[in-house]
Image (cartoon, rainbow, N blue to C red; front, side, top):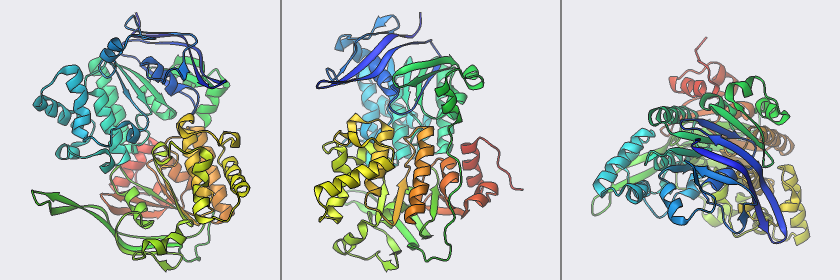
Length: 535
């Protein structure tokens, strides 16, 4: 008997008279100890299938016209709540794709990891704390063991994802459903986490259903692969056979998709549009009854930076290295010290009201699209919000035209602009976030992991789109990413950060061909699966 058996599963989403067939009569099994990778582009039905297994879809909006889901021979479809509660988080655990929206912002890290231990293992607070510390060490968060009272917003994207993994592994489940578990994690930690999951799977006999769009992960991890396309299971094969002789055209396209190309040349003689000198961001560490400042977290520690029109500066480094903090400081979204100039104007000491006219020329695309898009606004309202603030004299028809044009540019159907963020896949939501920034025709854009939630084929499309927009409008980009393949394809210059400092910087080609620092070499080796040596 298979550990999990899915037969003829279909999922429909109903919105009034409109019905969307998200999953169409798919069947597969997962054996004990097997790692099954489910791959496909955004909207193919991967996550919907996973949520169906745990019966987590919002009924009656989501319905199952057909299908059976059996776990250890027990039917999960329409099972009583008492049965599902005994399985969820205990026998079947899930790592969700977007950790910031999956973690409770009001609870500490310790409380959230310990919750599953209290519910399913009836542990005492002392034993639970020991297990929490053990789990944090297990997923590479040793530094958090002294900050158990930290909240999700105080962690980087990669750290939040690792907390989610710790929660999922807490009760040593029989089946782990991992929905893009390494999306927000840097390349070196990705390699560590994949090895961790593989080791745990071998040690405990745990089965894994790995949902991903990164085929390089699939080849390393999976025993077999299920390829989904528009809600259908188009190919299901052993991993090695699928990679060496794919049968379906869609599978062949996925295997061929990779971000590639090089950035367009820019004029190096043009003055920098953004200049930073000795930029620092220190966060105080307070302790004691009177909350005295005992030390500082030096998130950004004395960085100099110049970015010119038409230039892309890539910023790489592990989670917590200060990449996003650097971007937020440049835009004056957090407090910093040092000199910041935009378009020749000093803005480091500028009051908020004086800074507002500059905002339309300085935009940012955030890492977590779901968290940065208001669930109460339609896509059209989200994209046009900046137009209402900075171009109040535009008529509704003119605003709508801008929205339609920018949605076409980023590969979204303008007919969907009346829908809401929850009705879109993760990749589509990221494109909405890009459209919201680009609709204002800015001069400088910070792109904080803009492709981390996108499929490989869509990544390539977005990279091409960003290149075209840069060429057309002479845009300056600061591109923050842990994906060095993307950085290599779009950046003119690379800055490598570690613990708030720049450890190496230079032209992209030189950094990738001849990295000088061991840290840079390890990043490149982990990302490109090669051994990097100096020639």
